[in-house]
Length: 343
Image 1: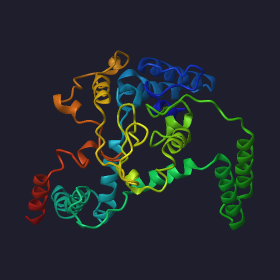
Image 2: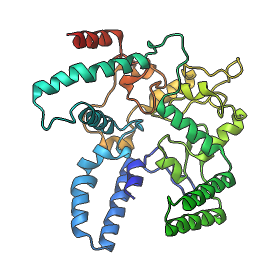
Image 3: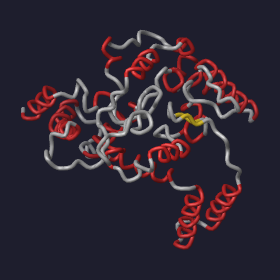
């Protein structure tokens, strides 16, 4: 339930007959009501007091709920920062308990910054020039998930059943766990297929998998894209290397769906500048809508030239500061880091 509240957004349709789009205020009210009814049903008075004061009050809601922002973010920056510090503590400071500030500064300058510099050079493709660059880790995962969602439902269920039976024979699954998984697979086989509002133009779908997806994708969208492009993305590495998720609909710009296919067979354009009408539509959508103005505290305006940058080219798992065309990832910054490391 909490996970669903986290991922709901006004731009994602609901799974109902009309494919309704709730406003940000309606999403907040419904989420609060769901939590309240659950706590009241189970007599969790203290849990409700904690959830309301720390999570669902309007001041706290805007800090974590995706519906409080007009755009759909690509990353969870808090997790990225925590991951950086966790790696630093386990890799460089594992022998020190509560290190002194001078030691911490030395570790950052000598150990951490050189790794950051190498990563920046790799993102800017300044390392190993002339050699083909492999897919990033998140691109490999996206490619694997795309291929998995492209398979027919019967194929996917058969694969799940085989994996479950193999783990049961090898002892990786306990007997009751194996029976439970096989029962769920059999129930999924006879479950009637749902009817969802799939919009390939905006790359949105009303199915629950789309709302909770890491990539904002589901099998319905993937299969429609494959059908319209003749299964071109399945074994096309340039397609996944150039694929980027946008903050606003359409969340993906697919060659052959939202723009003309490139003239060269098998090629995939790297520059995803949309046509003029899409640019104008997106410029209008970047304005904070009235339904989300209730949660808009402070000045969130962007520079005047932000609307002319087209669709974002940074990766779905990198912030805008780490993109290929980022203004902050520059040669001057890398030179500064190199100078600090040398000194």
